[in-house]
Image 1 (tube, rainbow, N blue to C red):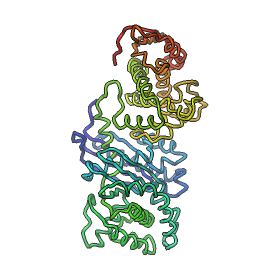
Image 2: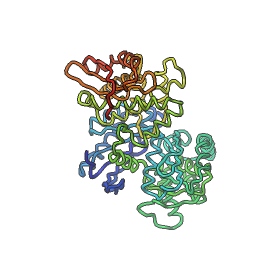
Image 3: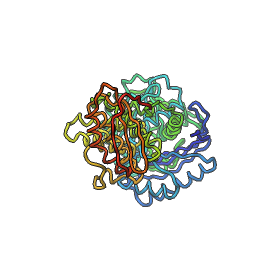
Image 4: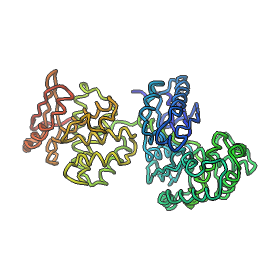
Length: 523
């Protein structure tokens, strides 16, 4: 598949939705050719962050309709990513479905950790910090992300529910700000971010990068206070802590939102959440023992563009197909739980051979390969908790791990495929399986069927089955297990045959698993 000439990225945020359209320049580079912003206030109150209101969803759908019209001018493929408000909303699927019906745009929901990674990718495009240790934070409406990275690799990441809207609702419900409210907010923030701030402080990063709208507002106000003109882009602007503190006091002294909106450098649309955002930013800078902040004008949406380019450009890795980031993240999780790495790798190889051979029958998208490979690597991590019901423990550990490079929907599917590698087949009365969309449930069933047989073919964890050859017709599928002449695989054949039932169900064919001695496997 050839790469498109342009790409569009949408950041479905708690306060605002942002769209960027980029022209691809090759070698992982791009230039922004269009931008749009809509202040949606999807999570306008604490209650809305838990459940989106009808009016909030209507505003969100209208913003997405506008963005769709913009992207149609350049015929740009769209990748939309949702963060805190959608991530936490109990009725998020209703909103996602409404957006899809109105615009045909599919929204991905990502974890706070993945959000931090994508922000870092955006920052790398804005500032020359690739070769140095970089520390950054991004204050959103519902959450704030922290990250330490170096040469594109994440060394530390975390996400906290301390966004500007959330802090406004909790500590600054009225327009007039009191000293006790500010102190209560600071104390809360200091406790919440203590460990993250310690990581930032000891990272050795030469500067603290801020990429949020709050940070850009503080920077614009600082420039205005210096008597300097405010440029169209604030990228690379540095604001020392004393100037930050002066600006914050100016914001807090304002008697109401109208006075804050009138302050030089302030976007009037942010006035009602500015006090909370400013206190949050100043507290973070102080807690991180930083001398100030450097502004990155690129953030999540530009990171989405770069991440999508990397996925389009990622060459095949032979038998394994996981991107480098996803591969490293999966292996990290496996090693954290002391998995049998050789077994995981071998089962992944066998599962992908089955996936390739049966592709004309299952017709799954190429991305399903990565889900299968990740599930195969991690299917036995549940042994870390207990041998009994380890498949269920695997599901829990995977579902609650931060696997970089996958969105929440993909992590849920990986966890379920691993959960069904033994014992029960997927059932509609299993809550996690029942919650999947029909297309995703179909993928889980097919991938679990392949994983079950692949796992059975390495029942002894000795790698005796070196590969498989598959033949099929309208009524049968024959899997020939390839092995050395001097190696018996009776136990592997017995185990795989016990686990072939789901494959028979999903492909509606009888399955026969046989030995083929002396043959060579081909990927």
